[in-house]
Image 1 (cartoon, rainbow, N blue to C red):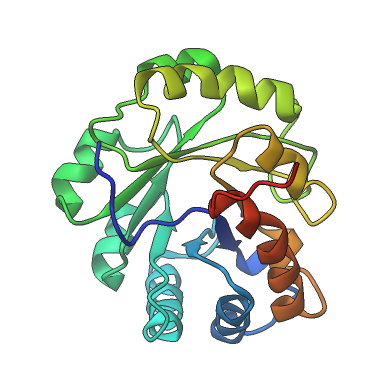
Image 2 (tube, rainbow, N blue to C red):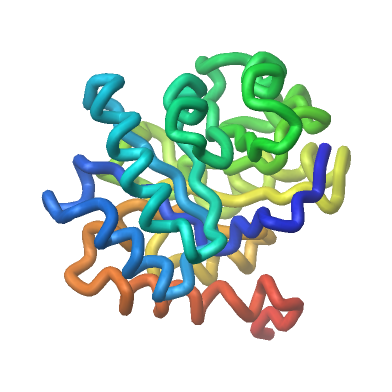
Length: 223
C-alpha cells in the first residue's frame, strides 16, 4: 500500500459522456476543477478505443495546470496511451497486480469494493484507494441494491482493520443532499457523476460539494 502525496479522494469527479448533457468534456472538467474537485475519473462504457484515447488526452490537457490526477475506468491500455495518472478497476476487470505491473509503481490504482468479503481480500499492497458502493440508487449505473451508510460501514470495516490510513471512498447516487451523511459514516471522500456533471452550473455544484466535504477532510468534521 502506498500513501501518495498527490492522491486526494475527497471530491472525486467521474465524467461520463453519457451523463454530461452532450457538453464538451474539457470545459466541464475545467469548471469542476475551479469548484474544488480533487480527483477525476474518465468513465466511458460505449465509445471505441480511439475515441476513448482521444477523449482521455483532451481531459488530461484540461487538467494539466491543476495538479488533479486523471484516472481511466477499467482500461489500462487507454491509460497507457493517454499517459493518464492511473486507473480505477472493478471486481471483474484486470487484476490489480497485473494493472500495477503494466502501469508501474508511479501510477494510481483504485478498486471498487461492494462487500465485506471483497474488502477482506482487496490487494491493499497493490492498490492506492478503494471506493465502496453503490451507496444510493442512481441512473448512472445498474445498481440494484443500494447499501446506504450502514452497508458502507460494514464493507469498510475490514479495510479499516487491515490498514487504518488506507483511503476509502463511497460511490453511487451521492450529491449535495446526502454527501454529509456519507462523510459522517466515515468515508474519506465521495465519488460523484451526475451530482457534478449533469448539473446546470458545474462549477457551482462542485463548489457546494467541496464546502460540504472539506471540513471532514481537514480534521474539522461538523458535530
